[in-house]
Image 1 (cartoon, one colour):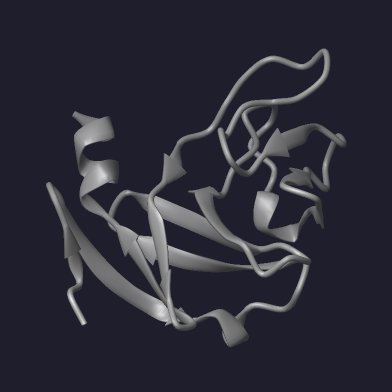
Image 2 (image 1 turned 90 degrees about the horizontal axis):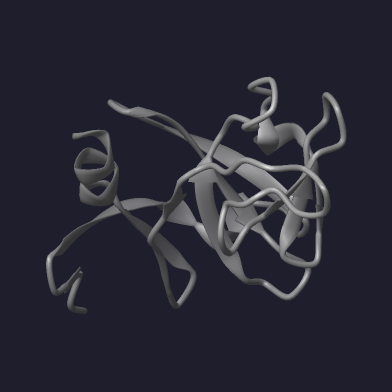
Length: 116
């Protein structure tokens, strides 16, 4: 199994079965916590684990379709783009994630580049 894509180093973070349907788990990185979400359709997304509004823990929010609702003030964040939906404005970084037969990998280098 090839674990690299051009310009990315992929790091294993677990298995999709570790995340409940419509749920999330956190991954701690040197650049901060990443929330990894699993939708009802078994799609996976990774974004920073803080709401752009007041820093609420998005990993504790409600997952619906391809979005998560922050548990603090009900902001809805797109899991695909990291942007607030509706009238709210703001965004969080998205992190590239791969699902290879249930094994999940994230590209930590994208966090490093964004932090520079």
